[in-house]
Image (tube, rainbow, N blue to C red):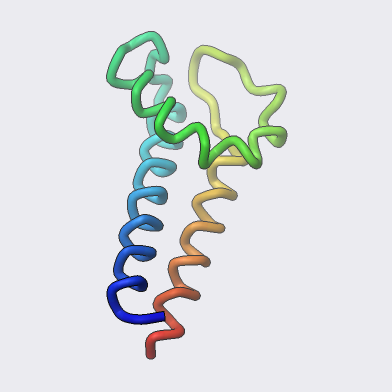
Length: 89
């Protein structure tokens, strides 16, 4: 993998991690999902939180909630980021 490809992968993983972290914090502080900007962020982050969403099947739709699946997705993203950057050194 050349340097340009590594930079693109790192940028993608950073954006995904930022989206997932924003999702986690917004839902933790009970952001209203009917707000257009919150709805946009939740829609953009849903494809990355979806694979582990089965963990949070019993979570409430409204109010404060802690999505453990999103936290697990953030951890996977950070580990992937570490592995990609580690191969360069």
